[in-house]
Image 1: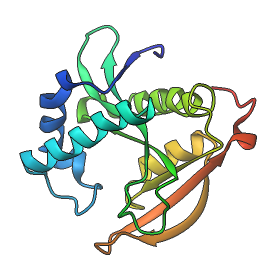
Image 2: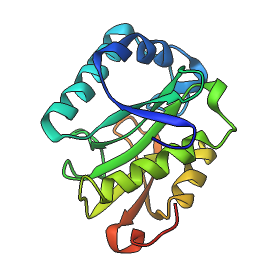
Image 3: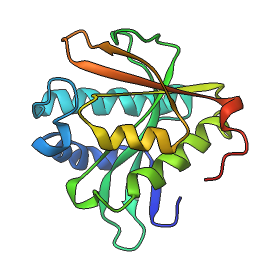
Image 4: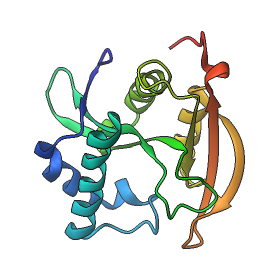
Length: 177
């Protein structure tokens, strides 16, 4: 929980919210090929991340507005998919997708700080990474606010540019939230 968000563990009741988010062009424009998803793909990714919680005890969290109770998107931690280029499946990444109505209010940063702290405090990770399309300047700024450092640039298996940031536990310790 943060000042303005409830960060709920990923659960079945949010399937429709997630599917709706994957159908919004502005939300997915920097994800993979940048096109909206089919319902089948949305369900596949939803199920994979639901299973992640069961297997690892951490994962994606629904971001819910504390006052209005509205679902705003998600933030979370997950092991990097095995087919990710230039990353290892033992790397844990931090990430977020928020709906357009939540943009520009600092909510992604607020939620990401809580998830970053969970990574090191509750989950006990030694390192997290973040991957984003370099055109998504807002995500890059959030990663820098989290204390993450640019590690390298790469491309996805589909040839899409990706920027990789990382944060080590020793560099996080004592950082103000």
